Length: 486
Ligand code: ATP
Image (cartoon, rainbow, N blue to C red; front, side, top):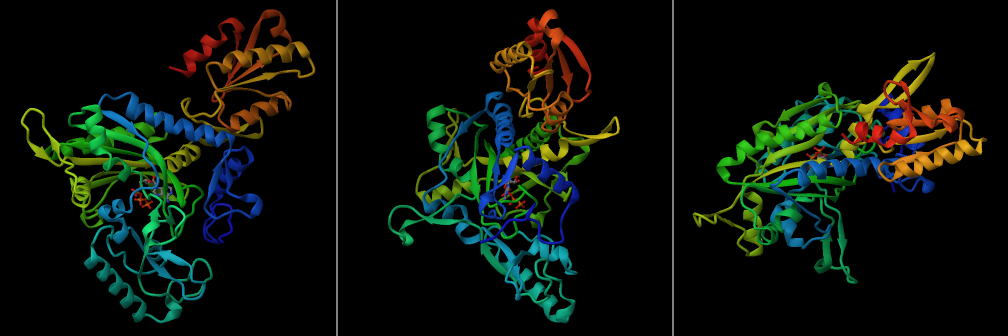
């Protein structure tokens, strides 16, 4: 059983900024270590009260932009367990594997990507062999063997876990989690936890087409859990074995696929920027020809500059007609699209923007984290956008011993709660209450004081500018709606 470390990085690879974020997440109830009271389970995380709100806001913002705001998209919620043939058709049973090298001393496995980074080994171009690219695998295996044979053991890269310098050759490791459905544990009952949500969309292509009478181009969107038995999970919630994906499969005529691919890349980049990600922290990375999965015509990743380096938030691929053809072949059902006017039948091409909810939430947390000097003290503030902030308004009484103030503050909170996520807090002095709310990204603090009892006005404090304004209680909701909902 793997026990957890603070960020689940291999020893000696701690990162001060990530440590601060992890500590804030735990202290304020965004993200906890899974099964913490039992010592934790490595790389599994639980979202606490504020984290659950944040993650829900990320998903809602995506669903609104992708499904509700567009006429060419519909939603789907497919099951995690699927017929085992799905994974044969998709290629996952044969080749959803990471290439690994194993330390002969501690038997920890390191992905080839990482081994290449910690070694002198010249980066062998693409290392992904998703698909039946046996030739590529053999090339990589022999180039690695040559490298390990040519130099003495003491010059081999050090294992990041135990420091030893003895390695096995290249191996393949299938990342799918297996389980059994029903009371029998035999090969007939073997099922997989889905490693991506996409296949649930492909196998429902006909169902959606028949029930919604859609015409090309149109897309199906889905949010859901996926599971991969990652060899080196880590960097907090960035790479875990259980995670949530937000996936779109957009069906087009083959000749129009490149155009829609470009449109989706721009649309998805804009989504992150509109939700507050800093422009200079986001870039697009186009895959080179030898890096592409064998079925893909093109792929571009949206990457974020995390404290641990530029890393993928989302991949946008042109998957050609591979998936529908494969499922037609394996299921015996014709998954072609028929043009209603010309009667022409063909397999649509698919553009797939595929992102991670957890990675997006982590990027929003990291990007919004600010420390600043205020009157000689450090103020920590999460500058989350209004759509993402877990709490929109906190109502705070200046004097909690004054019953009239408390009653008035609670009444205001109850009324605001009908329209926003609003909380009441009287567990500390006002300065401290402000700091607590800043740290979790609460947009506005509304303070009720003695004067409020007579002038029926409250003080509204802005999280980012810290400016305060007196606002009549009567107009408070309108004031907040104007600022928070538009
Ligand atoms: P990576 O190269 O980082 O392993 P990938 O290219 O295998 O990612 P995809 O298969 O394209 O990832 O999955 C689409 C998205 O799902 C990724 O961009 C990422 O946001 C998310 N994702 C994939 N694997 C994980 C994971 N282990 N933990 C968290 N999110 C993940």
